[in-house]
Amino acid sequence: MRPVSSTLRGTDRPLCEIYDVALLDLDGVVYIGRDAVPNAPAALASAREHGMHLAFVTNNAARPPVEVAAHLTELGIQAEAEEVITSSQAAARWLSDHLDTGARVLVVGTTGLRVALEERGLTPVDDASSPVDAVVQGYSPTLDWALLAEGAVAINSGAVWVATNVDPTVPSPRGPLPGNGSLVAALKHATGAEPVVTGKPDPTMHRETLIRTGARKPIVVGDRLDTDIEGANAAECPSLLVFSGVTTPAELLVAPPDLRPTYLGADVGALLTAQPEPEPIDVGARCGRWIAVRADEGLELRSASTDGRHDRSTGDGSPAAGDGDALDDDALDALRVLCAVHWANGGATADDEAAATAAVVVHAAAGDDAASGMVKRLGLG
Image (cartoon, rainbow, N blue to C red; front, side, top):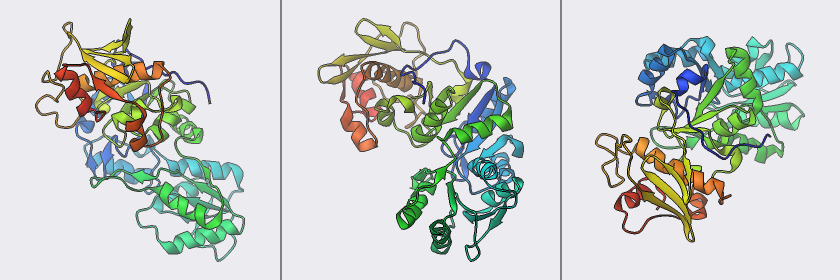
């Protein structure tokens, strides 16, 4: 993997005017469960009006592209089946490159996988009562023990095993639920085998997307550091991390270099705006009205004059009216400077949120109520 820049970048124009195709993750970025992420339909329509092409790229292998496009259309988001790229398609391409035409592939999943296999000239089957050449496993909300057992039989008999992704969870209105990675883990435990993984962050998925979209200057838009952002960095592609899904500010702050994004946004509306870049100053970094410095006991956040910058905060670090728990421009500026200083100093990293909050100490400057409120709002204090 190439060395990855640890510096968030800025732009003087909206992202939708700089990049030709937005490679959009779905779960947590465009929708959560059956509902659109607030602001997503309007923001994506506006991005199209600015000339940006959209590709909907998902590790979720449950549905074929035509069904995904229909769902997006129901949510008020213009989408054609040709604009949807799934991990099922990436897995099917890998299998067709390694197996003979017509090879029998046991599907541990649902319709999306079957359609993708047939598109590549392979034969999907439902059980291992007769020899199979490969097993392909993808997310299915109805997957049961019996089908997992068929997968175990085939894998133990020497079949090639491909997993569309190993995301441990999928977002839902009720919080994170078991994803394909959790069910892949069951077969790994039962067989002792390791699958070939073709979805994000593996470059196979990115190549599939570029083949199908013809993108020349794409940007990846995602909510997960360990799939969307890691996959973008592996493919040397700029990325926009949005906070409408699963990633928290604490997790971003302590992310290792290969999981760090190029840009930050509250949601996909960030495609419509220019990106501020943290500015190095003598004592640390500044962005908007926020200054972050390295202190003996960790990172210190300070508020400063806005110098005419539009400020949506209430002055005490809490969100402006109507923002609720969302990260607005002001909160993102504070997060940018904290990341800039921590990353520049080779700060500690962590693999989970509990470790993240313990890996680095963030505090407000003494007597700075605005900074104190912002530290709490970001979940860092």
